[in-house]
Length: 153
Image (cartoon, rainbow, N blue to C red; front, top):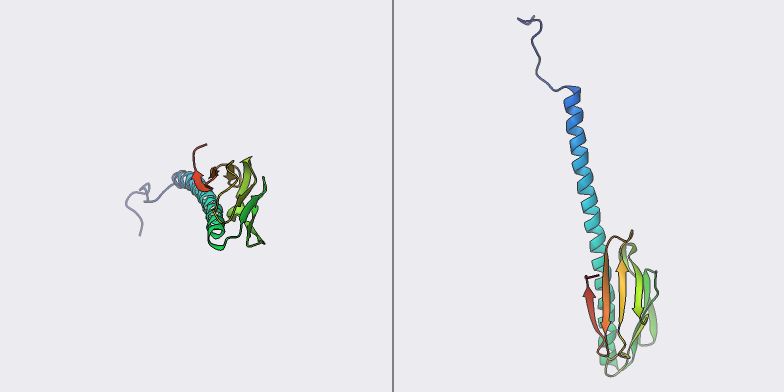
């Protein structure tokens, strides 16, 4: 059947309209992807800080329970540290490419049995994400060996 008007416009989108909508969607997806990546790296740093503080607290607890000294030794600019309990060293790796970038004070914390105390100097270790965009500090405070995670820089 022939349309009544030969110049009658058909319904649909032009190529220009489709390209404009696709470019807007690509920009929104890119922004969402960068935000998601930042959140993912921040979570990796939090997980690594939780792992390190958990091992420090466990070392102190075992020094109190077993009567044998326990220690945690870190290496700057590395993603590993050594946990020594009952004379047995165990190398631990931080998750997701997180590295220990800054060591202020000691790189070795020894919890002395039977009191579970340290030498009293305290230390601060900085955990940094891959790319250096996110960081947290793990602090061991004074003679008590209390462990804290500090997000302020």
